[in-house]
Length: 73
Image 1 (cartoon, rainbow, N blue to C red):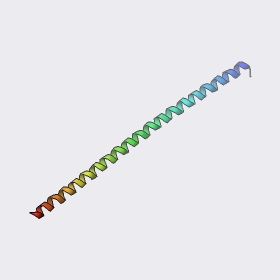
Image 2 (image 1 turned 90 degrees about the vertical axis):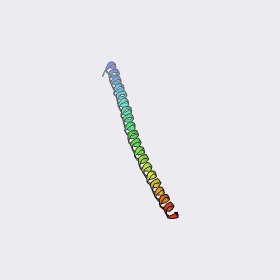
Image 3 (image 1 turned 45 degrees about the vertical axis):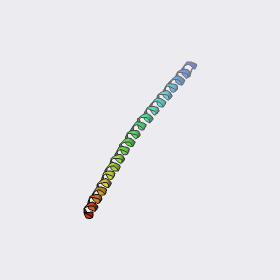
Image 4 (image 1 turned 180 degrees about the vertical axis):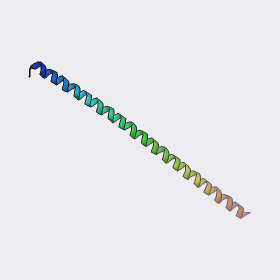
């Protein structure tokens, strides 16, 4: 190998390394985006369940209040 070919190999390796780092960072960002999406989906699902449970509790309370008021009359 000559000096110029060593330099070319070094440059090629450096470029390969830069590409590998770039693609790894891109993959990490994509994975973070997907994780964030699933987290938001789960949080929204949890909110809907909590809201439904709250409404059910209010309805139970209203039913109890209405029936107890009828009994007092």
